[in-house]
Length: 163
Image (cartoon, rainbow, N blue to C red; front, side, top):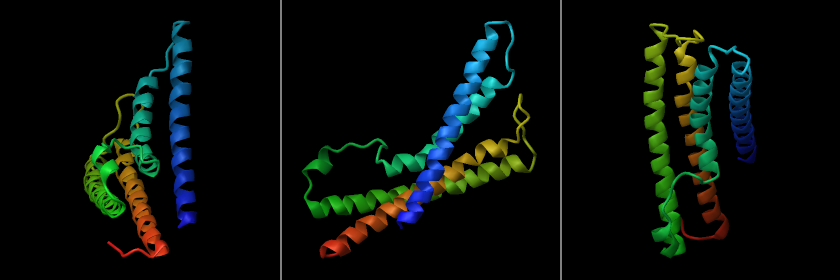
């Protein structure tokens, strides 16, 4: 379990760092070039695609860090067993949403592969951009799954009745 989490974390970190750094460097160089009357034609498109990859690639990391939006007023007043039940529900709902996102992400990719849609400036096949949606869904589903395993292994370790 820990080895899977290490691999996922390393992949997410690498993807996020590469996306943020490459987007920032390209935009920085483009700003410098504009000051001397030049420009990188594809810089803005590249930045948009980097942001898309960062957004969907970061979904799994957000689940890992529990940094998705939440309202904890009700959760804070629950007892331990109710919190665990709600945690299980939240992770199952997250997995269901990930499956939904995976299904429609794959359909989106399929619709751009067949006609070979390309981006206007970079002439990059659009499936390369859109594949970030199902990839983000898989990363989220894996993180929700590891959360569930962790929840149930805590139950087994502590000797409590399973939910």
